[in-house]
Length: 158
Image 1 (cartoon, one colour):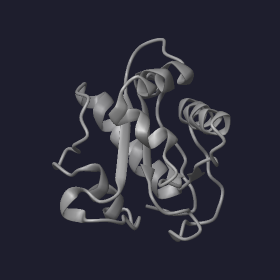
Image 2 (image 1 turned 180 degrees about the vertical axis):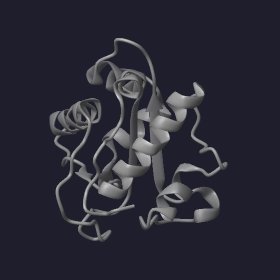
Image 3 (image 1 turned 90 degrees about the horizontal axis):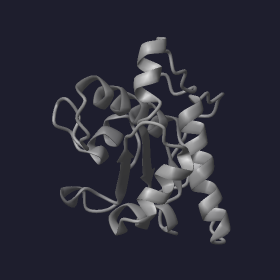
């Protein structure tokens, strides 16, 4: 993992598969405290639209925007590609790792009791023809998914 940013290199077919799959990973610490790697950050258009939609929701509620962490972006993109390849919506990676474990492996500090998954959340959704706003609306309709969207405890997203 480079740490200087992320470039989404994918062929047209994979992009069309992963575009409907919007993945959000949220975690506790602000990026400057979490030791985020500075540098240019390039996101795919679907990810950028989702980030903007989540932060617009937070802004409407008077909450600060989430900071983008390149490590979280990288693990989110990697997991989205895995899900698209397998066609199964899951929080577990190919090797059975949970979201917080993937974050730790990427060098992201996860707070809390790690035996319980730490203080870390991952929202995932897939569908065809959905906009970022549609996905955020779906997440708002489920308490488990809406909590990280409007939490004051989480600071970073990727």
